[in-house]
Length: 171
Image (cartoon, rainbow, N blue to C red; front, side):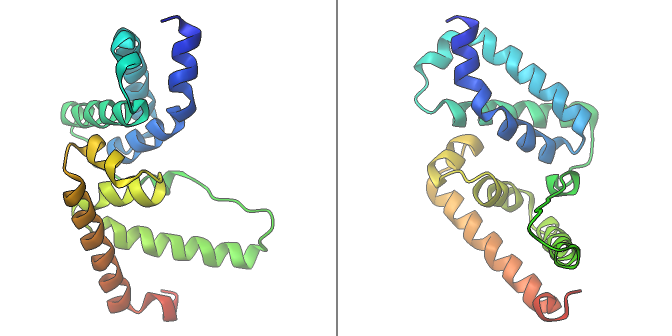
C-alpha cells in the first residue's frame, strides 16, 4: 500500500480519532501525541488494514487502547472533550448562545457523574455517531452490552437532570 492510499483510507476519520483520544487523555497535547503514535502504528500495520472490514472501528479501537495505555503511563485524569471545544453558530444571537453554552455545561457536568463505561459509549454513540455494532467493536464488548450501557447511561442522565430540575430552572 502506498502512502496516498493509506492517507485516503485513514485521514477521513482522523478528527474522530483525535476527539476520542482527547476525551480519554484529557489534554490536547497528549491527544496529539497519541494520534501520532496511532498513525505510526497504523502505517506499520497497513497491510493488515487493507483486510479489515470496518477500518474506522478498527482505528478507533487502536486509538482507545493507545490512549488508555498513555493514561496509565502518565496517570492523568480524564476530562470531558466538550470542555475543550467551542461551539459557534453565527445564526444565534449572543443571549441564546449563552443559554445554550450554560445548558451544555450542565449536561456535561451530569455526564461526568456517569460511570466510565457509560460515559464512553454515550460519547461514541451520541457525539461521534457510531452504530451499536461499531461501538461494540471499539470497546471490545457485545452489542447487547453496549445497548444496556447506553440505556442505563441515558436513564441515569435523565434521573440526574430531573432530580436537579435543570430544564426548568436553568441552573
